[in-house]
Amino acid sequence: MGNSDATKQRILEAATEEFAERGIAGARIDRIARAAQANKAQLYAYFGNKEQLFSAVLAERLRAIVDAVPIDGRDLPGYAVRLYDDYLAHPLVVKLAVWTRLERAPFGGLGPEIGTLDQPKFAAIAAAQAEGLVDPSIPPSDLFSMVIALSLTWSPVSTTIAASPDDDDAEHEHRRRLIRTAVRRLVTPDA
Image (cartoon, rainbow, N blue to C red; front, side, top):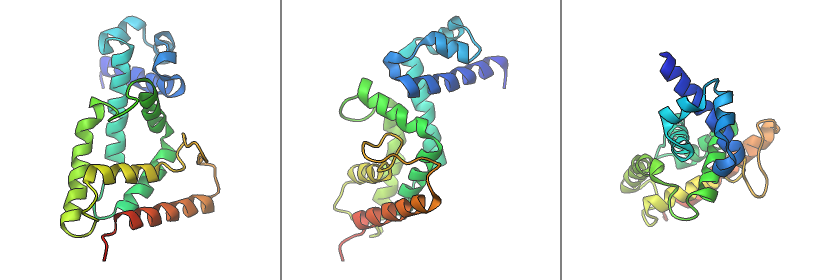
């Protein structure tokens, strides 16, 4: 990785932390540049402005979760559990999504950063529906949203109980069983 690429990566990492902690409005370019051991001129040259930097961070983190937790339309309960585990390991992704919802997209999709990432997921669900493995009465995009919602039940931004990686292993396993059961009941075709 060249110096330019290394600097860009340091900026993205510092910006991820800053945006996850403070949101778009509360984030400060000078803090990001200082944490990245870069200067503000470099940051602006690479990413434009704060909004564009946030878009770059969000796109990178969402791609990372897509790669880390690939969907399996034939095993949506397992997919939801893998998401739960990934949210525990990488809470910044969930926090960035919440800030996006609060500051950019109060309704509808989270934005153009996500649109193309969801299409293969919808296709995987549609394929499982065509095979009779998943309830075909729920459109793939709606089913996907519902599975995501169930996987977020104990996420770092839950309004009820937020899970911590430090929680007892038995508690995590209990939550995983509940997620599997709920998603299985949701997606199983009527007999």
